[in-house]
Length: 257
Image (cartoon, rainbow, N blue to C red; front, top):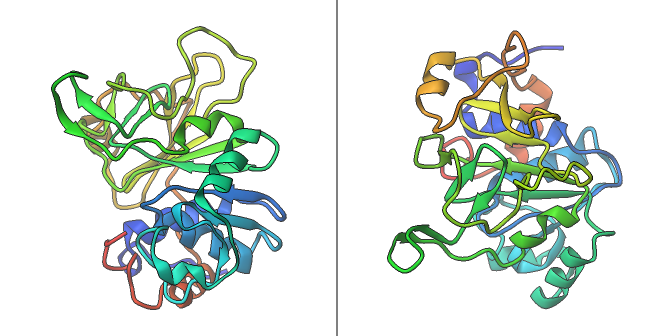
């Protein structure tokens, strides 16, 4: 199996490949509005390791959009070329059921050490310094069997000790270990998983071009790895070839996702 070298792919392409590898045949996935990365990951998985995977591209309600070309937002009308299209109200109702979605792709303006995501106000509720678009279906992340968090920004403003507002719940402070929290965080620098006892994010892998100290400096909470931290496995030539057929306009290659 040929492995592509780091200068032959972008951070966003690696992120899409990492997320695709987490998907399994016949699962059902859902994502939000700014979703080029999970859209690419789902389509890549369908064509490689997860045949029979189904996914809904968030705000469009498009079921298995045909992705020609890859688009930046799940609200793009080009996604309506799909196997089926559901009204947004039905999509939200499906999110709330708890027996439909295996994977929920989530993100936020802020993401904290417990995997909580904030797409609402940043700062004081009454006088926020920044107001996000709101959560829409994000409050239902805990109804999915697995949550994968992704962010194209990895700074101390994004990764904070505690979010200012919870739009999508991660591991809560009540110590309840009976419910499933997020399983993975994917960023342009690294991947994180969660300590099953402490229910906090920990460093799982480092992307090939990144120094560990840089990750620590750009994260607003302590990242304690479980042990020696491996490099993130890069895309194979086969994965990258399929991904670039999906992303024929080079959205991920240019870093515009």
